[in-house]
Image (cartoon, rainbow, N blue to C red; front, side, top):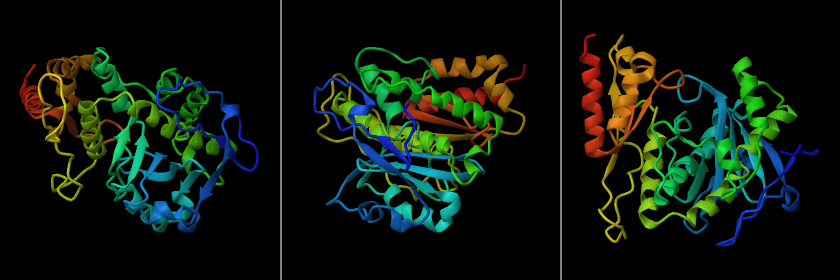
Length: 336
């Protein structure tokens, strides 16, 4: 991706017309500023005060250290048509993050994210999310292609897909390498040119991809996208009240047009794993957990290094989630 001139700017693709073939030549798109935000007054009023009369669609992402566990939120990226805002959580502090909270929890602001599982934390309950990773899988299923367990499209892979963008993002691997070398990469200030460029690149194409995907999804897939996005936002979050203080999950519309059977209710289940039992759940080289995933039509996600290490998160139709729970509990009791 092209370097940013000074002051910080980047290209943002315009929303495509229906049926338009996506052709991305960055120099053909307008430059927009990339603004580093340390005070709420630098953000658009329509974002800070969301309302039904002014619905928004924005690209969204977060950068930090060990996000979703006991980590540090460093930057929230917001992609608008006219600007990219890098909300500096370190310089702006808690007051700035709380100023963003109403929009991030609002049903009037659509947040377009790629993989939202680790972006709901720090007292914010993300709402009205469109997860492009989920949307990609739903479109693939509509077109007759089944996804294997743990076969998720990466953001780099999504950008490279000519149906949605057709853009190479080689610098992403360089930033990942730097993060492996120094997990505190996003904490350093002032933000380097590379940090600004990488943060902006993670969100600037998301609204464009959103428009491409919405035209491909049928009514049933749109409902799955809404409910799974809501469930994924809860994933890896710790709660003692079964998410009762979160926005309600989207209900199945009475007039939903479906081919074949009606969609099943989907839920999130959080399974506690007793100390010393996670190895039995995973099995040698992951064979046990892979077998369970292949047997159940449900997403099974381990807390791992970045989430709660003693929990397993299961998302899917109620019957499949209960089946996965039973199999996982069986592995915990199994002696070998």
